[in-house]
Image: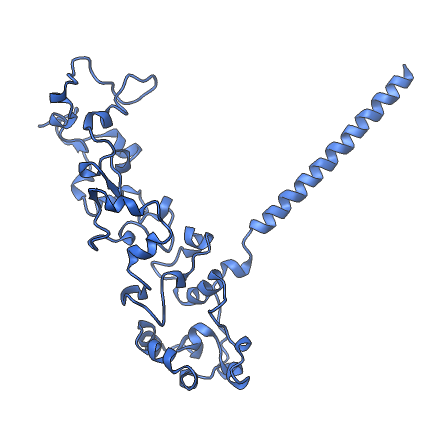
Length: 323
């Protein structure tokens, strides 16, 4: 009996040691993963240029070797902004982005003595631009944006020296830049009914903020994603005395495909009644009223909106019907 008790105690001790070792190893792995995923200060803080004027050579000195770059810079919007700036040399001219250049000049053009964008990572380049633009209305949330998290930097879309589009100094038309990455969205704008992005009447940034935001998919809205739709479709916004519940719970995208659709009005279904029946069915626990038994679903009456015309909301009829 005593022998069995000793064996049992040894077994329990062995299990406890193994369990403790496993927990320690798991905690170490979790810690290592957290350290890898946790952004460092250098990754999430914008570049702060040195303020000592003695470190700077001036744009005129840069022009002696980089005449072509200086000429393209003088034609950019940055040049006018730099000249009007009353701040120190660290914010002006070529050195406003590349950093102090005196050591670079004295070193006979030593590239290690100045910041060269060629070969730098997307985040390193973006940090340079965030020194000026971090508090801009557009760029204030860039460090929380999907672009930043996926190593898409400022120079992937913008160009200081070779901008094709003067507005925002873009390298190419905005839609072409977006479609380089968002390939799954591109075909939607070639469907029979679509928002006219390819035609240049609507741009991606009308609805999305490429520099970041607080809503899903970087939608330009603080109150709710539907506010973006209501900028162009104000008659659908309400407020209404009788609301269509789906407008509050799921929003416009419950019925419409925002980029493009094969159906009129960008609807998700070809038949209106099939779209309505996705909610209005005799489903247990559903808050939407089911289709009444007296409704005729023959082809002639399939479009629910023949009667329920105020589909977004009504100020006079509880069934969203014609007043």
